Length: 150
Image (cartoon, rainbow, N blue to C red):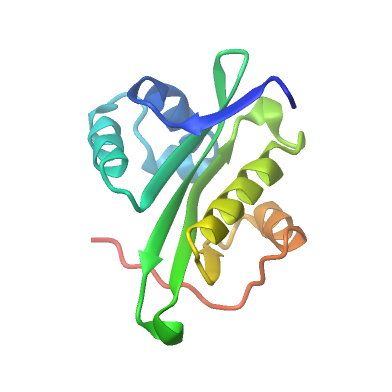
């Protein structure tokens, strides 16, 4: 994968990121590739926050993967810092290539570098392939997650 570049996401990457977010049955229901303004505003906010890291994987000038890493200082677990991995997407053409593993390992390494004691992520209950992938990388399905749409 020497032809792969992993770098911070830039505003010009938004169309490709949103296309990947929308490229599955769940994402198709909640993403809007026709209106990129909210994504642009979000990336600007994220870029200005030192605890937020949105990265893209680029191969041959094409965005082929992305994820967001959030660093959260906390009081629980004796004042531990934790990280959350979110928005992991790999372009359909790249799935099974090892790129997802490489992105997750990068996020875990950055979490260690930032002195996090815990890395966590959530995955929709219907994404059983993703669950197997995360378990293979050492994550444990240890909690039940709850969400409330506002």
